[in-house]
Structures are given as C-alpha cells and as structure tokens.
Image (cartoon, rainbow, N blue to C red; front, side):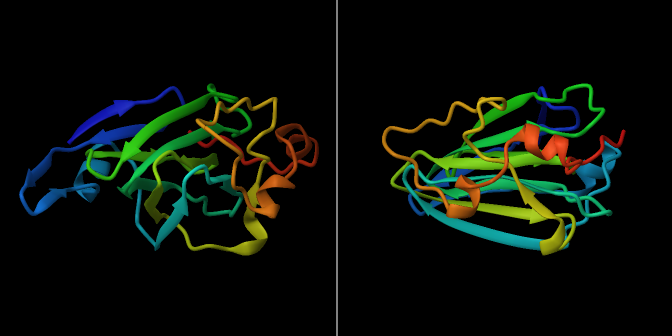
Length: 188
C-alpha cells in the first residue's frame, strides 16, 4: 500500500491496488502491520456500514471519549466525498479541512485520527461507506458540528438540496462547541 499524508496532522490516505476482471474487482483496505510500522496504535473495536442516497450529507461527527476514537473509512460502493475537519484543541492543523474522493472501485481508504471530525457526502446515485472504529460507540461522548457551519467552510459537492438528519442540521457550530469546551484535545 501507498500512504499519502493529508493536511490534517496524523491523517492519511492509503492507496492499494485494485484487481479487476470480468467478475468485478478485489482490493485490500486495511493491514495492521502497516499501521504498526508507522507507530500508529489502531485496534478495531467496532465495524460499521452506512448506506446513503445521492446528496446525503452525514456529519460532522466526532468523539470526546477518554480513550479517543480513530476511524479507518473506505467506500464499498458508489462514490463519496469524505471530509475531515481538525477540531483538536492545540493541533498544529486546527481548522484544516480535507476532502478526499472515494469510490468503491478505487483502492483508497482514509485514516481519521482520534478527535478529528468526520463526515461525507454521497455523489453517486447511492453509496456505501465502511469504517472501522478504534473504540465502541458511546452515546454521551459522541458529538457533532453542523456540517454547514460557515466557520468550518466545507464545500459539499451537492447538485441539489442536501439530505441531512435533523440531528446534524440542528447541531451546534464549531464556535459553540469551542465555547462549551466540547472539543477534543490534540494528543501528539
């Protein structure tokens, strides 16, 4: 696999070959030894799959759980623009926004470090996002920032009205989360 660092500290894209034939394709999207070689502690504790229709925006979600929650995400079907926002207090890249195009038939995955807000937008008719989490979902520690917050400034690739949950649409802004001391710390 090839690893490409992103503009968010500790985040990267992993690129792997895609083997295709008349049956379809096969690709790898996670190998623990590669993480260990980069001195990144990542142990999958939960795996999730999200199916969404065109113009769905999910996020921006993050965890303030004491153990942290890193994510490894990939698109299993369709096309998705994956979004990372560095909201970690004290991070050298605080406020940085990264958008990574993912497709089911392209060998790209994204590592989202603990404390970085994550979201995505489905750009195909429908899309499936698969992700591994380093800690289990823990409702009191799971927070969100409004995906359309002007301070964050994500340029969602919409070609019509966004389909978004009431929870995400009504989420506080980054400034409101900052003022409420609900942002995660940067851990080097």
